[in-house]
Amino acid sequence: MYPFMTLDDGTEIVHSETLSDGRVRVYMEKPDEKDGFHHATCYLPGYQWEDIDGLSEEELHRCQEVIESTAHLILRFAADGGFENASNF
Picture 1 (tube, rainbow, N blue to C red):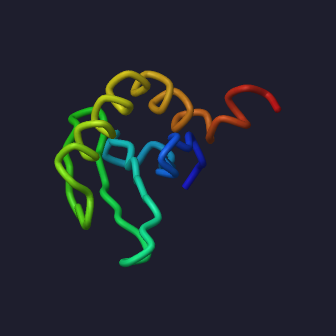
Picture 2: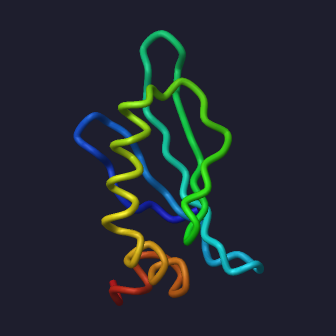
């Protein structure tokens, strides 16, 4: 999994490399004082959500908006081995 972004509420977003079926797994994890972590998985390019645990509808909607607005980058970075490889760092 490659690091991608940290939101202002502490939600971490990471993604896989391009999978054999052409999809990319995007995983979100948000720390929670009571439960430890809340999380969800989204598969691009179809925006298929699964394994949602502890995130509210509002939080999930925000994650959806972020992923939709950056999906082109995530897909590119996944094909190129993450941000560091894609940006030549």
